[in-house]
Amino acid sequence: RMGDEPVNVKEYQELAKQALPKMYYDFFAGGSEDQHTLKENVEAFQRITLRPRVLVDVSKIDMSTTILGYKTSAPIIVAPTSLHQLAHPQGEILTAKAAAACNVIMGLSFSSTCTIEEVASSCNAVRFFQLYVYKRRDISALMVKRAEANGFKAILLTVDTPKMGHREADIKNKMIAPQLKNFEGLMSTTVDNSEGSNLEAFTSSSLDPSLSWKDIAWLKSITQLPILIKGVLTREDVIKAMEIGVEGIIASNHGGRQLDYVPAAIDALEEVVLAVQGRIPVLFDGGIRRGTDVFKALALGAQAVMVGRPVLYGLAAKGEYGVKRVIEMLKDELELTMALSGCPTLNDITRNHVRTQIDDHH
Ligand code: FNR
Image 1 (cartoon, helix red, strand yellow):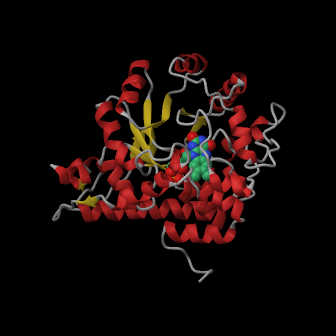
Image 2 (cartoon, rainbow, N blue to C red):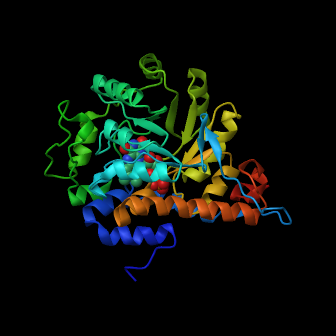
């Protein structure tokens, strides 16, 4: 069985679990506290059903689109996730190469294990840079400058992480934060905390919990790049974001790793989409494991989805090839879903192609 070619994301997850030390698998797979939101992120997709249309000519399916003006083969983006070298020694460099090979956009985490420059020089994928704001604002500002100088096309400002969520597996495993290469010579990212998660100790001591809406103006003052805010779940925050002026919203609950008992990301998407009123793009992440999940998120109004853990599982199981296969499988499944639903293009996917529990109440 081990040598068999995995046929879906779930089988890549199994392979990754076998390949990785428990500490690292738990770090990638886990969520916060009761992991209720983590579980819901996947299960909520299973409660949404499809409403296919038949007798549509589906001999040609076009999944291509543009995101912030950049062409992509499919509405699938590699989500920014940290510490890829814990999955594979070449880390984010391989992930970015796989994204380029699949012609999809690569999201690079602020907490990457390869540098911004290494990732930029090893792949020609369109790249977005995810930003955390540290108490050391100068360090965050420097990373924005480096991303801009190295051809990254957007800043994804993560706003759901003023402090790190309580990830109990990491505490039990005494998860160790490796030195993050971007910060070499600037700050040490290894903190000794023999009591629990070294990663949490470092993250919590470095993140700036005072970050607030007024700081968007600061970020705008230091970069020309479009700013998308990642981790919005309510109409109240969409309204504030649009007042202040951002170029996009990412409906996300950080893969169930931050505040537990927020709704499944897919259950929060429509509220965000309705509040945005089509004025700026809405991206989505959380729980995407199948092409049908991508289709459902698009039907509920996302312009594209980001994929976090599946990419890490591909990387851990089979390196660059594994990441490529995971993206290709999701693309193939989306293509088939579009064909079987009577949607030859992404524009053909509408709200009426899905049925949610909200619809059942009406
Ligand atoms: C993340 N995520 C994340 N987000 C972010 O803004 N900065 C980061 O450094 C990380 N790091 C990170 C590490 C790991 C191991 C995971 C699983 C996730 C969150 C990520 O961008 C995305 O929101 C979720 O991964 C989406 O959920 P799925 O696709 O993993 O279900």
